Structures are given as C-alpha cells and as structure tokens.
Image 1 (cartoon, one colour):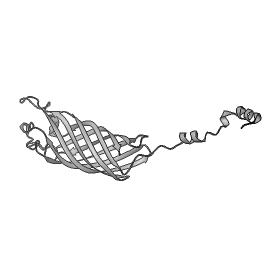
Image 2 (tube, rainbow, N blue to C red):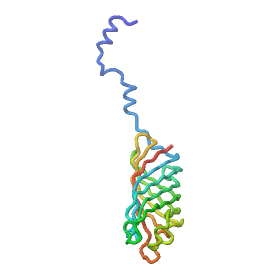
Image 3 (cartoon, rainbow, N blue to C red):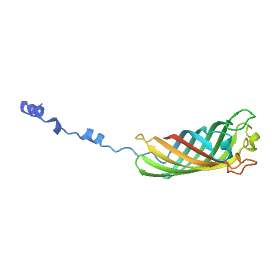
Image 4 (cartoon, helix red, strand yellow):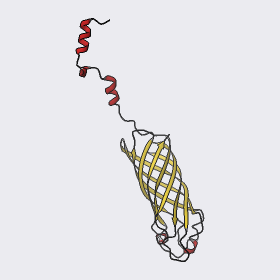
Length: 205
C-alpha cells in the first residue's frame, strides 16, 4: 500500500516523463515488406489497340485479364493467364454492317522483377500462348485465321506499388503483342501487332 508521501509524489510526476515504451515501439514498428515466394492472383482492366492493318477495322477495345502465378524467387514469377477484349468492326467500310466480336487468349510466361524501394518495384514480363476471335466476322476483310486458335507472343513493362498490407499491390503496365497469324491479312503487308495497357490489382496468398 502506498504511503501518503509516495502517492503525492506519483500524482505530481510530469506525464511526459512516463515510460512510453510499448506505445513508442508500436509507432516505430517498420512497415511489413511485400510477400514473396507465394501464389499471386492478379486481375487487370485496360485497353487493346491494333498497330497493323487491323487499326482500319477495329477501334481500341476494353481489355480484361486474369493472371495466376507463383513467385519462385524474389525476382522471378512464372504464371498462366487468360484475357478477353470486346471489340467491333466499327472502322471497316460498309457493307457489311458493323459487327461485334470478342478476342480471347490464354498463355504462360515469366516475370522478372526489381524492387529498388520498399513500396516500389518494376517488372519485365514475357508471354506466349494461343488466341482467337469468337466469331468469324473478320474473314470478309482478309483475316482468314482470325476465328481459329493461333499462337501469339508478347511482352510488357510494369511498375508496382506495394501496399502496407503485404498481401496487396497495385500496378500499371504497357506492352506489345504479335498475333502471328490471327491478324495476318491475306493482302496486307503490315505486321499483326497490337498494344496493350492497363491497371492491375494483385493479391499474394
């Protein structure tokens, strides 16, 4: 039991001199680093546009992608992905009337990452797979293989912003794809290239 003298001394003590140990330690705790060596699920929304002869047939289209990967090392992830772009023949000469179609694809690839700062990283991603248009609406314009599964290759550069919660990250990216046969025009000379760009949200298990 405290004596009157000890109680008066305790009440007169300056609050600033109180031991702030647990609170200070909590406030000064470092941010958690991004999770590594885990399963990564990444969804993105963006746009796909053509650079070859197809730019005279279809406008830039909304593009959606879902990617699942595994980070083998801090700097290497292998992944599988699927994507779809919803487009139309709005730029083509009439007839026939404007028609819509979906361009879908699926593939695999590696991602090389570099993280110079705790919350900021960059990556280079390569991919290859198969793609097709869901309806045979482009044969009229000289794209005889558009509605068949044909190979594509591509690559992109991205920047990632890691959140305080180590499960989440945001990314912005852009790149090119070569639809080797899908958009190779029968009577065209330009390469069947397309650009892609988007914003992504990743979750690491």
